[in-house]
Image (cartoon, rainbow, N blue to C red):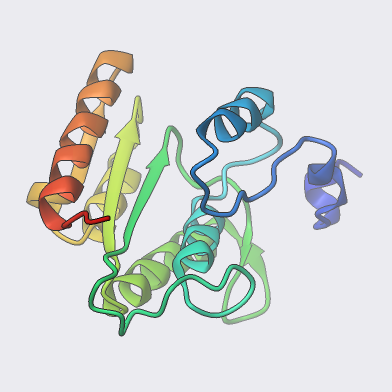
Length: 172
């Protein structure tokens, strides 16, 4: 059976698709990104879940607590495709629709913790997924971006940088 039908994660390990803890080692992050290769299906809700884990105060990454008023958290979710990975739902079955529902629920839960959710639809030709991303963002007018090409993507990240910079105060 193909790997994606085996429902196991073992095949992903060899593809270097590993979550990297928050770090100021930009060269290391860039190196890891350059070595990553797409593999199997698109699983947007899983990406959202791992992003939330990185920012959450509990295990496995143990970020600073949300109650720390000196701490502001932002999660950027970017996809260039619609959900194609069958995901578990309430009924125990796996299907794409459950993956989409999982993303919607995760978005609500992440926003409820005070994390600002910013979403980007990159060269995405699927209205349902674009609407899901728009609704996932904290403020669709401010935190949802459509980027058709690399220039648009650069502009989106420039706006995100400006938004986050204006929301935080840096001190030594």
